[in-house]
Image (cartoon, rainbow, N blue to C red; front, side, top):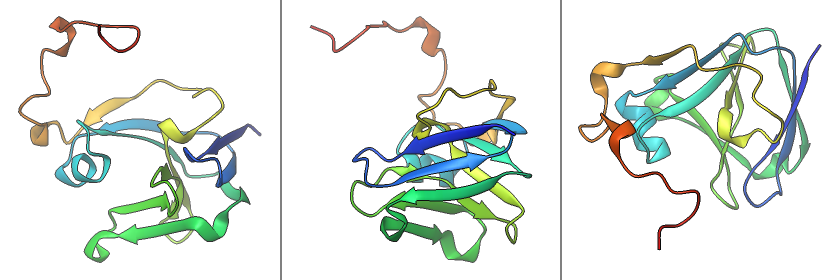
Length: 134
């Protein structure tokens, strides 16, 4: 069984996911764009995994948008996205960016592409910098 460790930006919340990720989707739906403030969310899905909070569980806030099933967990201290358990405990959803260990799989697909931001196209043609531009 694989173990994946992660944390929030301030480091007060740490966790471990025990199990394997089955899929990795880049979601462009309006909810994911809104709650990430970015072009898409990058979430790993692990239906047979378990989530264990190592530190800071009391700092984890979980929000279910209008009881729609669009669920986001985050650190109350720094606001970083964190994993959550959905579907009556049968699915662990992990924002890929909160993992401290390597992400073991590549994204399977872009989903809700019809909802993509109008500026989210032809990005391979813009400048790339290794750090802040001068």
